[in-house]
Length: 129
Image (tube, helix red, strand yellow):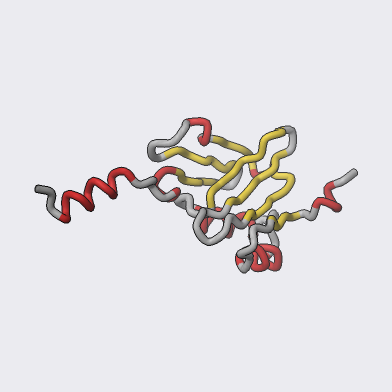
């Protein structure tokens, strides 16, 4: 006969791990690294220079999913995506703001979002040639 504890252990072992347990973002003065720390496709491992950032977006994914920080880079077609729950995300988000990549008024508007919108800096109009 199964005990309540064994049923809970079985259930917890099969549920998806939160982003903070499988992905981390680390950085220094020159570069940023997105690192797989759990069972996740190694394609999530990415590295880029702060100077390569061309645009930062915050995508609201609703109440039941992790929001995303999307980093567009000069010379790279596919952006880097960091789930807002990744380990180290608060420090990273703060560094984006301190370095001028995502101004406070934009992130405040983004954090209050619940309708699935995307907030970017600089706005698309200012990135056109």
